Image (cartoon, rainbow, N blue to C red; front, side, top):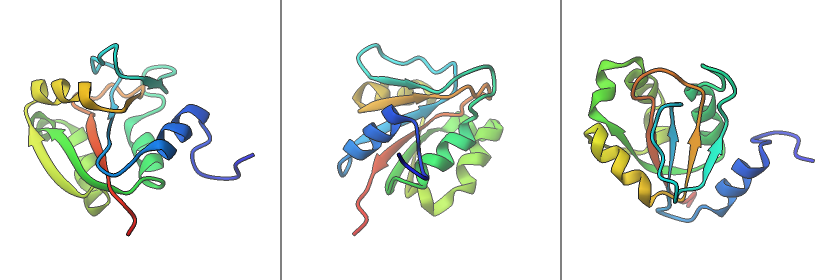
Length: 130
C-alpha cells in the first residue's frame, strides 16, 4: 500500500502513464468535459475536493513544462491561485475560455474537482525530470 502521495488509484495510474507533452486538465465542477475524454471525478460536494488541493497534489508528482489557462481567469480568484504556483507550472499560454474548452478534447484525461469558483481550470502539459 502506498504510504504517501496520491492514493486515488485511478488518478495515480493516469499520472504514471503520462509521457512527455501529454496533456490533461484539472477543472472546476462546472467545466464541460467531452464524453470521449476519461474523467476522474473527485467532486464530492460543492467545494470538496477543491481545485487548489487537487492541483498541489498533482504538482507534487508531475513535472509540468507548460500550462494553458483561460484569460478570463484574471477576473477570478482562480487566476491568482494558478499564478501562485509559478515555475511549478512551467510556461504559460493564455487563451479565451471557449478555446480552452475546445482543447480539452485532446487531453489524455480530465480531473473534475468540487470547486465552484469561476475559471478554476488549467490544462497541464507533462514535461520530463531530466
